[in-house]
Image (tube, one colour):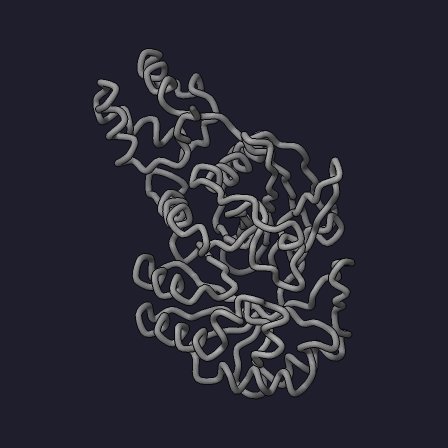
Length: 362
């Protein structure tokens, strides 16, 4: 029988386990900080924890880093792509993106996966080509960040992650309980202490869970994969739209803003001949003009199996101009790691005859 993952336990849960095995509660705090703040990947790294305590907990909890199958580093911008193999042999990819700013602090953003594969079937997304295998446990989600920290601190002992985006493989809101656990662990003052507003959850539009998130964790940043302002087009690009069409989704967005008073980011992948024309831009203005939001434009990266292409730079510029001149707040996503196929989350490779889907969502 598999032991519970230590990396997925809250401090309260760890305290309860300490009591169950006859240890004082304060030992839980020591172990929690070693794991969540310092990234300890082995029991003997916990120098101020007695061996008897470590042995007692090692008998009931699993503390082991996931296996790094492959690492690639961009020569262009330092983006790092990690392929992790989980205990059951499944694989997920995690991406570290580094941003240097002339004003304000630099950012180190980790894009994490929440599922092995994905059931959403979005037209431009490589992950959906392999379908959904399983949800990740909270410890597997958190472990992606902790293992990247362990890896980078071998070169830079002061390295820390400033932002986490749940935009890798899978639909985060379909793994809701583990998502919330991971968010709270990342935010813990005794852990990485990443501010809630520096944690971004991206969804294709699971309406009931959007409202749950507003009530359960109103401070995180919400990003919604929109990609069209017309149901007939969005049905093709984002099949979840058939369950929760645009009117329902926009009503949920309004309710979310009312509850949280937080701005929503709408992700919009521009696809040549599908959703990138001038009328598409005008429809998008109409759909979002009265919402507290911004729109992140993403010229799509081609995935050979989908047949989708990115629009020309001129068409992208015209689309952005229409939105901007209509008063819509926009940004154009900065591509990271394009020389290692890490940009826009559409990388996939074959290994052993199976798809390895790497950071599959836009």
